[in-house]
Image (cartoon, rainbow, N blue to C red):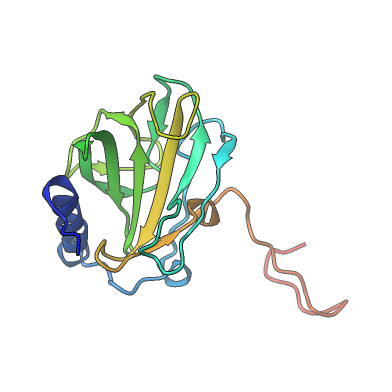
Length: 183
């Protein structure tokens, strides 16, 4: 049995403690959180490698998406959050955020311009994109999202949380009721 040590254990403990400190519900889900994210790179980038969640969750997989970028490009917070990690973690430059409702997002490799405990919004530059993410020939950002504490969190595709596409409901029957202000 492999034991967690050093920076990985510290990150897991920190992420697990965030819901208690911030008062966010541990069992929060996308449906009840209201969290909607913005792209961390602007303009919206190409996706070089998609999300590939392993089943069961302890197997190998790709727990995020790799986004095309350029070295030195600003990396933005995906939404309102508190910085929980900003610096080297397991030999890689990482920024991690705790959003309201129990969502955590991570950004790697990023040369941080923020500090742990700092409040951020979607207009906050977290740092600059650094070269050297494994699996990318050019600079790219690995962007991850997870619901709940690290010890038992559920990784999700962050693209499913993007606010870029508004949802519009249509009546089930022609001539049926329309939403207030609807067309």
